[in-house]
Image: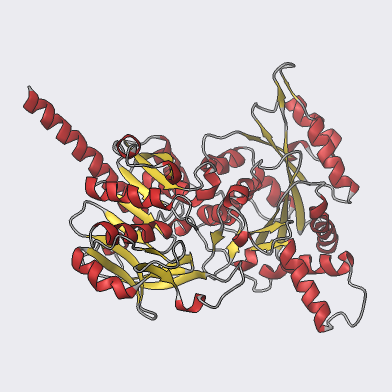
Length: 548
């Protein structure tokens, strides 16, 4: 029988439920168990696809084309297995399904209510991944905090499932905060006690407490929490602030979270977790031999979560090159010709990030001109790739009004235009070109040297594409299409001749980078940045020697 673990949060949001869930899953996976994680979000949006990145962070896309919560990125990066649309469910999806069933007469005229109809649909979704028998353990993270009105149906569904499955087949981990009052110089347990009380009031006794804290929990505090929250002392887990999210599995191993979970679920803990690769990754992460500085040019740089997968892909690629990657975020809206040298001149490489709409686009385009002419390694993703095409068309081909029809619908030179099958789409959310698509790579290209495979598959999220009417002109001038979806003749990758490293991709490679499999394009980009730094250093030495 599949076992179920539910991760809830209390006291405060942003405590790291996703990281704790992913860390536990990693430890269980390392012991040989088949594990997956799913995220249930209480907000009424059907999916994060239409949410502002400033409010929700990045929208993570799965192979099967689901627009999902960014926590699914953590799940994939830790477990090294793909997720799907079944791994992320929102209140909006639940209610949409139930209302559609009511309209179809599925409920035979009964009054449709939160209990049992909404809770039954939530339970169906929670257990859906167990039907195939692929997984021994399914971890479900519940978004928000206990006590939120919109989260009550999910909490009630957990209560029902825990009763239906039995205590040995389902358990609840409650992540909470132990604040430190500097004036009193002590940790306070009362917020956690109140959070657990909220759970008890809706009929759920948490089995394990994971306590976020800035300071160690001594045995007196652990006993106090155990007594007042009705758990065993070894079920009070310390989750101290870590130097990296990738250190959290090791911290949870030290606290024996995985062992405690297995004991409560009646599963064997005899096999010790095999974490050799993970520890090797951590050692390289904490002891880099080199360092590079990469500029991240985007329009949402104020919020790191807006480009979360890119930041993590840099970490993976850095470790692969035994290199610390320092990322300097640069707001494209404030880039001008007057500050290019100050903002970009010292960088070892520049990534121009995705981001829909016209705000900041001219800063991106102008900065790419400076990067191209200064021979700085360049990596453009999605809209960043499109900006590279526009810049080249304007400044090399001389098509001064070259643009994307997303921003300028009446441009005479639409080098980027809307995809044919998107032109009659009027609804938002789940209607773009989404998910994994094939791409064939050209010989003697940066892409082929990076991937080492002619045929690849990458995840997409866009409505606009490279306009093939301009392909011959652009290629004759030196901007080559080196990756193409041959089924639809869509240009997926462009590269520039006679440049140390210049590549733009229509897809989102950052979404497939994991600890065990860093993305090859990020790896080769950081390698190029290292060469750029060494080249600058040698040039400077030669100049100094010449001056002497």
